[in-house]
Image (cartoon, rainbow over all chains, first blue to last red; front, side):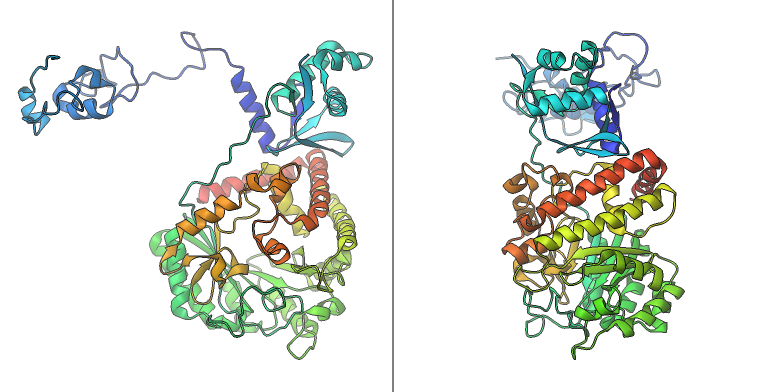
Amino acid sequence: MPHLKAINKKAHRIVDAVAETKKDVVALQQGPPQQPPHFPLGCSLVFSPGWEADQTGGTAGLCQPVERDIFDCHVGCFWPAQVPDQLNHSPDWTAKCASAQKDWRKLDLVFPG
Amino acid sequence: MMALVSREFHMFNAAGKSFLYLVPSAAIFALDEATSAVLRVVSESKSGEDAVVASLANRFEPDVVRAAIGELTEVRAIGYEHQPEAVVPRMLPMMPFPLNTMVLNVTNQCNLACTYCYEYGEDKIVDTAHGKQAKFMTEETARESVDFLLRESGRLAHMTFFGGETLLNFPVLQSTIAYARRRAADEGKEIDFSLTTNATLLRPDIIEFLAENRVGVTISIDGPREMQDKFRVFHNGAGSYDVVAPKIKELLRRHRSRPIGARVTLTSDTLDITRIYKHLTEEIGFWEVGFAPVTTSPQQHYAIGEQGFDRMLDQFRRLAREFTDHVAENRHHGFSNVKDTLEEIHKGVSKAYPCGAGLGLLGVSTDGDVALCHRFAGSDAHKFGTVRDGIDRGAQSAFLEQHHIADKTDCSKCWARPLCSGGCYHEAHVRYGSTGHPNLHYCEWIRGWTETCLEIYGELSERNPEFLARFDREEAKAEAAI
């Protein structure tokens, strides 16, 4: 700010906050400020389709295979769209699947009825 | 027309420059000529941007004025009339809030009978002479208090011993410090100790203990003999100056591990601040001296009246002038009231509550009752649990709910509220019968004193910014410790 000079710490924070609001939209833009890409490890908290390799280049860290984290995915994640709706329509979908790692083959297809 | 109006701020001058103190953010900006001029025009009457540009056309280019308006709008010193003022959300602190400081009233007895004392005089809250409370804290209660503190604290805990006269219960103090050190080490926490005393009971072995254990010491003393002996007297009415002066000198000579401060109570009869300061620093040898006006109901003869506050402000200002000149040349000055306020101004503190009482600071009575602060220790109406059962979170939340600055209507238009926040709960309780009442009897004095501290801050930002930068380093150190 050429006219106002920040003196105490709070004033400096206000100047920073004002500068932040003036930044351009940075999506699809080259150069800084770009965040390094986020590699999902285990489960991803954001909807970020397109990741086909984890940060080691393999697939173990992804939200697949299904036996790895089927329960996490359909309870706490974006993935529920791809599994049956256990709350309303298919409460018994996992009844035969006590341990996903062992019994995942027992999970059946569900058809909307 | 989109009219510009001024938002909340306070302008002050220092070192030949104009500064802006924003409320409630507590940010300080130095103004240039253009921004000063714009603020003046907008403060005098609301006017549209073009009108402001036109009225300053003989002094500044239109682009300069528009840029100045833009900056002042961005920091919310001014705004457009049709846009509502940004409302500060009334936020309560996250709970559980860590306990930073515990003040332990190890006794409610005193060997002095200072006429103005809030603990025993006519303004007392708790009957310590005939009440149900124990007169001395037992070793067991003191240990339970230590456990309580270490349960509720973060990595760093402060323990302050208080009274009555603290040293009347020196044996418990001694064993408690040893116990607290051991327990803190077990828990991997850091703990430090301080106490307040009237100095009458200092002995060589006590001084030795305090020095070895790095116990911070604050001495209550009112100044040279005739001032000290006016109110700080023994039960038989004899003055205490001749008893305490040699003992304090001995303490200052031997105890070099922590700075030792004097805490002066000012009354209508003892307002000669410069003389008190000179005596306590130059003749006695204190490193720091802090002053506080006596807490009392207005009818007491020693209560400071309106004229007294004016005189006190005048004297504070004179001593503050001396402080500024010392500090500008990197010399020490021990007027601690200024230093504390400068630190808050530097950080841009904007308080939701006047002090940490009931939040990061709690008092403990001789029985182990937890209270709002040491001044309310033992009062059932201000009880926040016990050291055995822990903090009564319900009582604490209710207190914080009722004492937020957003609900103090009298303060809502005052520019000094980021620093004052209504003032001391105990003072308010004594004056108005309610901890939630703003201390309206000293508003003028608080604004006057805050203005002076802002001026000193502005001046030091020009003359010795390095001194102010020290507060950042101290804060970084404290944060690293947490």
